Amino acid sequence: MPPITTISRAMRHTHLALALLVLLTTTTDAWGGESDGRLDIYWIDVEGGAATLLVTPAGETLLIDSGNPGRRDPDRIVKVVTEVAGCKRIDHLVTTHYHGDHYGGAITLATLLPIGTLYDNGQFEGMPDNPGKAYFDIRAEKKEVLAPGSEIKLRQSDKTGAAAIKVRCLGTRQQFVLAGEATPANDSICSDAREKNRDGSDNANSVVLHIGFGPWKMLDAGDLTWNQEAKLVCPKNLIGLVDVYQTTHHGLDASNNPLVIRSIEPRVAIMNNGATKGGMPDVFEALRAQKSIQAIYQLHKNLTPAGADLNEPAEYIANLEKECAGNYVHLSVAPDGASYKVSIPANKHERQFTTRDAEGKK
Ligand SMILES: [Zn+2]
Image 1 (cartoon, rainbow, N blue to C red):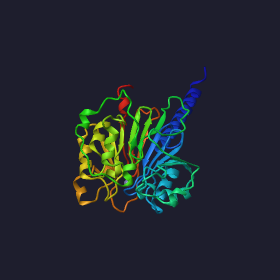
Image 2 (cartoon, rainbow, N blue to C red; image 1 turned 135 degrees about the vertical axis):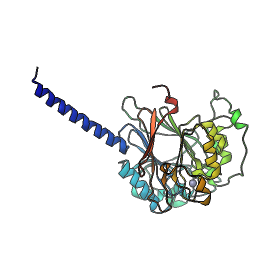
Image 3 (cartoon, helix red, strand yellow; image 1 turned 90 degrees about the vertical axis):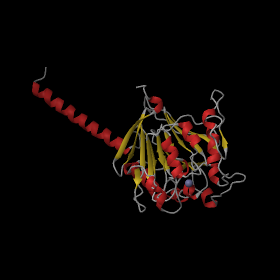
């Protein structure tokens, strides 16, 4: 048996090693990104456009929409990809539709970071808005036209116990996946259906993505508009229930059909609005009427006169001023998909959530 002093010295070393391990683990968690087993999602502020970055547990990046043309938005995207997430390229870039606040940043972004596969609607008959030659000439290793049912092929983490990540296109160009025969009709909700004026713009052609990470689920429907949104849940709910709803179309009331919100029963809503774009009264009303929702996050405080009574508490808003620092919202899902946290690093807000399908199973 070693003398007491040797034991206590050994124990001190163990403590030191443990403390170091805890420190390392916490640091990695705080930063998210590569190889920590978590799925990290960043809503990058592109001032009322869209740029949603996923960093998978295997360290791949998937950017859904690329913000506006010019330098500001691509620079903000590059900063989050490289400095925050510690990645070097965009492995997968999806353009949900051909409006400048969704594809506009891609042209410059492709000159700043290598792009793996670019996914979009290609050129199709009757396209109402054309992004033009500069967009179609973007340098990417591969290009793929999405169709209902398409999957973005992502590398899976080889860690034991890691949840599988699956990103699937539920609809695009006004065509949607077919409901399974076992899916019941959504009659109680669909009986409240009402139409809005037909949207002849490319919003109606938006790519709708369902993101699954084990039990955790999220919907990003681009700027899909009201009448098309109804097709996602009526007569049958093609989405199922989700944890996180990226409010469609920046929280504009031409979208965010309550039929969808009521059918998918989200827990967290994240609104990629601008200071004077989106975040409209009817949308806040629909979100607040939905009892499943535990938190609503905004990329911007709504600074229009109508916004005065609408905004969530300041700690749930990433940017409070019109001239802002471009703060992002960060969501990080645990490696098993059973829980997640949403944070706004700029104001130190952080809140934990339990994944709905994992509740009571631990
Ligand atoms: Zn938009």
